[in-house]
Image 1 (cartoon, helix red, strand yellow):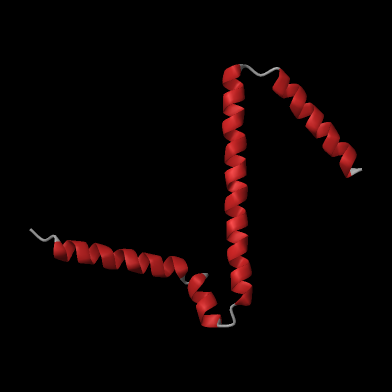
Image 2: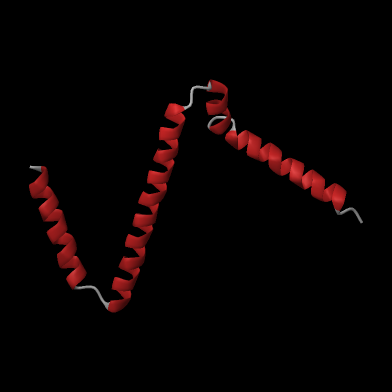
Length: 89
């Protein structure tokens, strides 16, 4: 059943593409490229997850996942403090 519905969707999409102007085709191409790049980013993220599955240190996993945003914010504050101290008038 899935195959049949997939075929119907593909046909509908192809029929719509046939009627697009050049500008619309260019835009569609851009949208498809964005979808492809998003898929690549998702695959990269999932490959990182595979790495985490192999890590046995729970503290390291926490540092790379849960604590990462907090640590980045802390790091940014340190950089801002350094810059303000370093570049005093």
